Image (cartoon, rainbow, N blue to C red; front, side):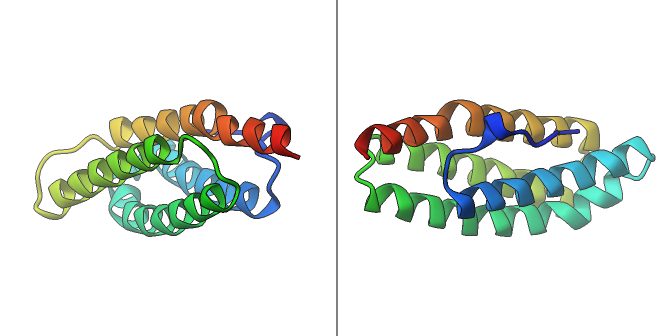
Length: 131
């Protein structure tokens, strides 16, 4: 499970709230996995997570554009890579291919934490320095 903390804040209330929603969705899957209902949760929550993530990425990238973040293209590529990977996972699930809910949930947790704490903090620092 992911515990939200202030060290995850990027200093933008809307983006922080969106990150909290993403954390909640990943935690919802983790909770289901711990109760032995991971497969059902991944099938149910993953499409919601992917859709919300796309909305979040659009907002975040628009924010970066407005604040002239110099690494927007690189950040956009990271977003596209995750979306493509999540679609591949979802397609495999929908076509009945084997998947591990523990692996899927672990991947999403690790990606989200790494992305917020490393990549998103870069634009947070950029914005703080620009003020």
